[in-house]
Amino acid sequence: MTCEKAFDGYLELDKFERVPVGITVHLLFCPTCRTAVRNLTRAEKVLAKPYVPSKGIPRSIDPVVAAAIARIQGSGLAYNTDCTSEQRVSLQRWLLCGAIMIAGFAFLPFSSMGQWSKAVFGTAYSIPLFLLCGVAITIYCMFFIATNIDFFVKKFGLQHNTQ
Amino acid sequence: MNLPLNNRSFAINDDLILCKEALAGNASSFAVLAEKYRKRIFGLGYSFFRNPDDAEDFVQDVLVKVYVSLATFRGESQFSTWVMRIAYNTAINSIKRKHEYTSLAEDFEIVDPCENPEELHLRNCSIDAIREALTDLPERYRACIDMFFFYDMAYAEISEVTGLPVNTIKSHVFRAKKLLRERLDEGDKK
Image (cartoon, rainbow over all chains, first blue to last red; front, top):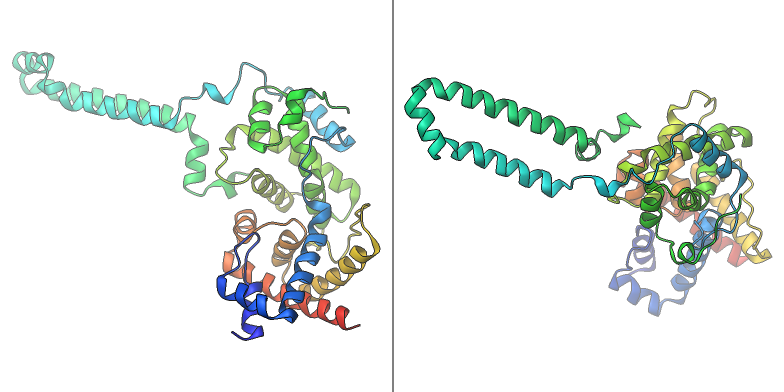
């Protein structure tokens, strides 16, 4: 592998991406490229240094951040302890409930109640049943989408229009 | 503003945990998160507004937006990427924005108090290379170069924030890296 090819391959790498074996081997045997890689890595590190988020807990807060927090609290936007995200119904539970509801409607005509209704009302029984199914599924979908709107926004890539 | 420093808060440094705590009503957890990303938001704001006062107002606006949208953060992307996306969109849509995007390498004195003379020289050399790479580069791609070099963001993260294709970002960053290498080589020869 030539120096140029190896170095171009190195330059194509993303942040924190693993260096391919071929390039690693080249760097092991080529001191020029090794020095260049070392310089480049140091330069990138120096450039990013002022903006890399600190890992520890800050001892004090900048006045701008303090002003933003005061603004949040002053405008009544602050979350209170009663309103936690843990209170949300998980997606799995929603889907399980939906599946049970649909299965229930599918098996209703075969249940004893379904058989009795069919015997008593005949074909007139089908229309109210379908209407009931439709209304129930519509209400279910309405609540499901309303309570998981952020999921749909992300799923269908609508976030750029919303923020 | 002083933070209540209890044992618990010392142990926490994960964004997701801090996020959940903030959602549970712990304002100091949000303060920690905000402090962590303040510099980045300010840098981005300065690039758009080119004025420290407007950039500070921008930091406040973004932090309020981040706080209000905190419940929608599901941890599918990194918290830093999510914050930068809100900041970028806020800046793009801001009515106060009078200027085009200016790279941090073009018009911003980046100061790091812990810097030694060698690092300072390396930074100046690197900034020159980035400035050269930015020549003739359309405004919307300038932010990509800054995000890669100054905000330490990966291609996919930059793409998520700016909405630009990964390959386009990659090719612009590649060119900048090549120029950076040439400059560093020249510096070594001197």
